[in-house]
Length: 100
Image 1 (tube, one colour):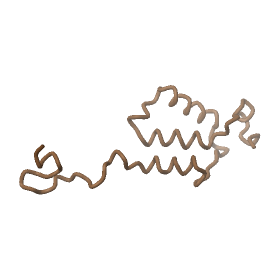
Image 2 (cartoon, one colour):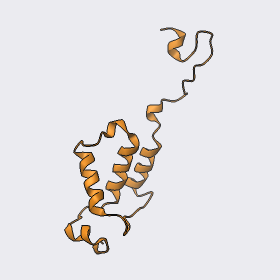
Image 3 (cartoon, helix red, strand yellow):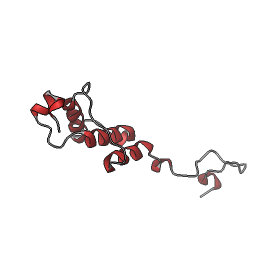
């Protein structure tokens, strides 16, 4: 390997390679982790349609959305999944106030 392979230019100066691996920097994933662990709490409001959010998560999990290409989208799916009630039935989808 040459010095250039290690982030240094031919004249010995850095070509801007960061000190850390950018594939491991995932602030959206960190936020999703906080939602999933309960460190951050959120809830679906009256202006949001829980059934539409459930469909979004289902489409993502079915592979209709390429989560690998967009870490922010993957984090969004995780956050939405953590806020949806596990037992969302037709009544809860039609009337958000009926959820526990």
